[in-house]
Length: 88
Image 1 (cartoon, rainbow, N blue to C red):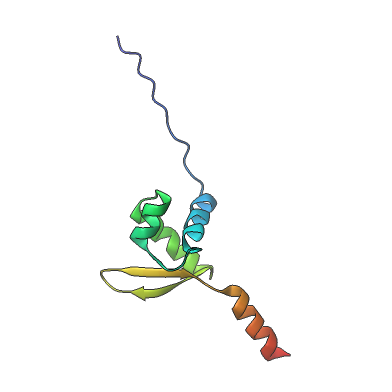
Image 2 (tube, rainbow, N blue to C red; image 1 turned 90 degrees about the vertical axis):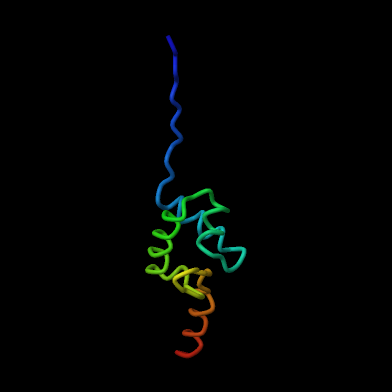
């Protein structure tokens, strides 16, 4: 008789996944495949969470075609400083 033990890895939470993606983008512009490779996430998971991060304004697409999607972190600090200067 086989005494097989199945060990399941604990799944990452959505905030953990999004933080991994943001950390990967700290190094600069990345494709979905590059982010997936660097984080160990699947392409589909990365793609779905990128949509969420675009919606929250944390990242922005640099280039999107049917063959490749390139993203970067949005420079929120600069946007806020520019708005503050204009309103002053």
